[in-house]
Image 1 (tube, rainbow, N blue to C red):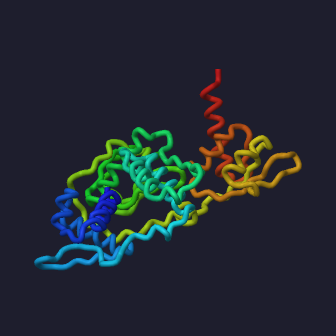
Image 2 (image 1 turned 120 degrees about the vertical axis):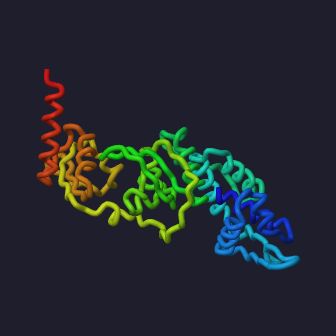
Image 3 (image 1 turned 45 degrees about the vertical axis):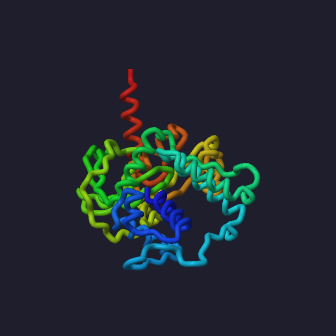
Length: 302
């Protein structure tokens, strides 16, 4: 992966007086063009790399530069370790674990006490999630079209995309890219993807900014929900909306008012409360809940 190679290039430059793009390309088994992009990325990250053309030229770090660990506090190192550990939870290799060992060895005096932050990003699908993420990362790095089968509420389809970002958002993993079928940028949930393959077809990288996943943009309000919940559901309402999300009524029931963007997702969520919720508004939601309840009765009628 690219991060592995960037760290590897930096390590070589710190140890050797000078090297060349062909040498780095051969060492990491990539093209010279890829190495040139990596050098640009390292420069953007603040590493003072100097390149010289002609005989005796090459790539080197400017004299007098060294990585100063004192800019990192003990808390900084603990946060870095927590981040690496979380990545290892969805990694198909032991790379991040090995990197953690290196950091701990080189900065043991900066890491005190036991781990206080534990993050697992793998969900229930770790065995299938890690290979998907690895394949997508390779396709992004190599700028290759990604193909997969996709299962959505509107049906199944075969998709090909130009992948740009692997995203962890709303407690799920996604890939964000240009869909060749829809001719637009789309977000695909990894758990709905199957037969994920990196093709050998290259694509020209578009000018795709870091996506804006703010709730106002992704989930614009269309339905204003007003519903009453039984008191024993207070824990769940607090868990999902916070301790100030409800108004307690005279009969003890809890009044919730929230905005939603999708009718089907709203109804599906309400149904998880069974008979412990009464929708007051909007009427469209009341009617759909009533229709589903009648269908359930018919299914179980003797």
